Image (tube, rainbow, N blue to C red; front, top):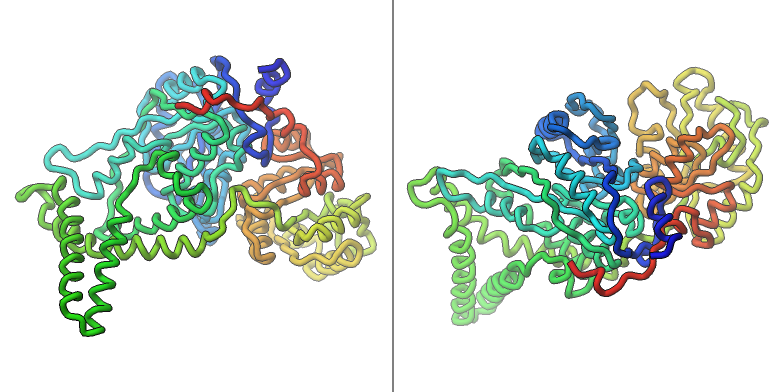
Length: 558
């Protein structure tokens, strides 16, 4: 590694690349310093187990402290009751992500941090008292070409009987490759590959997809010595049918990564081909019966029955024995769900193949730009209700016109707390917006939050509501949006919503906001430079510093 490349790595905790192609961040081997810093990110939908996990973190023995703990509240924005969060000895930050799934929640979490490493934990795991110390030791030992370190998972199973099908499925996490129930990644690598693919709506294949992209970029993933406990969650009898929705995620992986994705991601073959055979036998049975072909129908029905029976036997065999607790109920569940699972799996796979046909690599290109109003497009006049005081910042019209000519949709996201404070009326704000529209517009959407800081709304930046609403109004996903603003709340709202962010500082922008944006987003001296970044005509200084020499073949071997 050259001296410049090494210096770039040393400074990557403060300034790292945003949205780089994976080839811009390929590794070279070197020894790690012993003071690797990390943040903890916990996505949650409000399970009671979250509080137990946080108490376990607070009770760490001889801890190596994280820079912060980020809890990502991924409940729908309509749920405004507070999460049950016990006190921690370290900074605790809560981010709302709008109920968009664990991939989007993890992205919102790591994008709010500046630590060198990001340790992801599920909200239903338990951490032993030495977890943080062992994690820190694993990170300190990681070589320069190691992008991620997986923890070891232990799933307690009942000692008085054989485990049920659901319990065995959960226990499979003990040998699963790169499961983010306990997985630490370098933040610079997450930025380079675009983080988790938010098209995965459930906690199933998003971790395998990320690992595959990281390893294809030339990085290694390793297993550490730190360990967590993953209890088996309670589940109803239909859970094994519901989880077949993951077959649609398999279709996305195949569309993006090709037919060899299973081997590369180390996920195993699964049973899908047998499910197709089972559904095919049932279809032939029905078609032959309707056509009066009794012999064919009988033969096909026998094939369906044999396949279904064999599948049920495979699931019942390792389970509770006659006389053991829950045996009869487990056999009944397996019999019913073994008949339903093949149909559910095939239906979800077909739907996924149709939905993701022609899917491109993650992250997607920017298709829309949401701009802050005051301080970004027009001079900041506090609580302005007078259209005559609207003065576009230098170059605003030219910058916005360039975005339009490039085919990007353009909208506005603006906090207007003066309405809540009684300093301006909604009509006055509308009049000012109309003047901005006349001077710089047209804009395809206006998203305005009228609430005050203490109103507890989910639209006021840094919450993601305005950005999510703006993306929906423009007909794009949040990942296809970029947010351009002049203060930290603009950047935080973009991160929480899953959008790209560019900070254009003004004299009112606090230095710590600029420093944080330099580590988590892009920073531009003016709107023209920001547009250059979004159109791919310039690289940020952070991106340049994140570059690495091309990897060797040796570097991609585990």
